[in-house]
Image 1: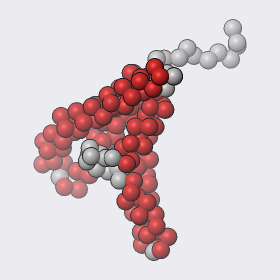
Image 2: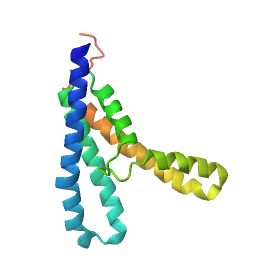
Image 3: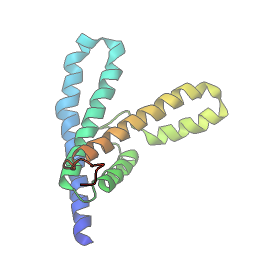
Length: 147
């Protein structure tokens, strides 16, 4: 049990290191270099795509270092990311999302931005989980013949 806990803690630590490295060494320079080419309307879309790639890479690294409980480690990492963002993934702001939910119940004007925020959060957290799933070794194909 202690061994599994240490492996999970190691993969979470590597997840933070990976997310920090990809965000500051790849994502931000790419946005700065491509912003003049993309134009102002496309910068948020490009940033969201790069954040999805960064989270998928983070999930992949975490999954490779924790083959036994990759999904559990990624879910713990996602919970930590929801609480402590450190500005690495600006699109993730769960506390603001909860305030937006409360506001949407009070006024229908907030409904469109609520849907957009929920979809964005699902896409980002889904990228993290997909990255962890992709890190698994390939499974043999299932045979219907049972042979």
